[in-house]
View 1 (tube, rainbow, N blue to C red):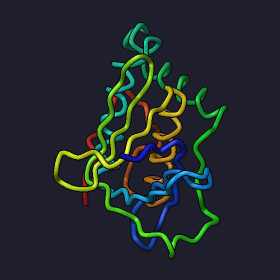
View 2 (view 1 turned 135 degrees about the horizontal axis):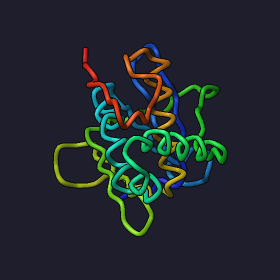
View 3 (view 1 turned 120 degrees about the vertical axis):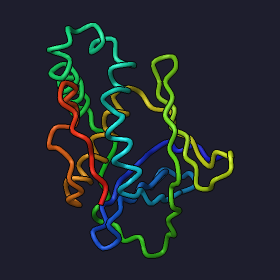
View 4 (view 1 turned 30 degrees about the vertical axis):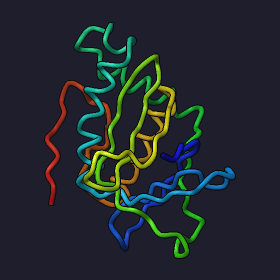
Amino acid sequence: MINLASLSFHFDVVEDRIRLIGNLDNGQQRVDFWLTRRLVLRLLDASPKLLLQTSEKVSRTPFEHQSAMAQFEHDEAQQAQLVRQDASLTHKDVEALLLRRLDISFQKEQYRLSFFVSDDAACFAISVLSRQEMHQILHWMHKGCLQLKWGVSNSLFDLNEQPTTRLQ
């Protein structure tokens, strides 16, 4: 199993997918994944509930203000951006694996992302993230959806009014 210590994103209009690059330029084994529209939209649809369940700030806020608190927490995380979009590199020499499943768990104030590239139970790679880093991952996925025109709302954390995402 590969540990992904750094994550970068590239939005590929031709492929109509998001390329998630693990361990770019950090001396560890590089791994590229294709994130499909279906997978990303499902993750973004689940992210407000995930935030509500894992953020003490949001869960303790009265319901009518939870959306604003979630957005505040999300904006605060953007101030210390650690995840970057990789628009400058070409990726022709690096094969990307199709990410079939991405599991997210939360324990001891950290998120664990488990990456699966096949239908069997074997986890291919993991990444352990802080709350701030998780927000940044969600931000870049959301930004990719907007850039690729996948029909997402401009607001990622509208907890009070989550529209159902429609797949094309």
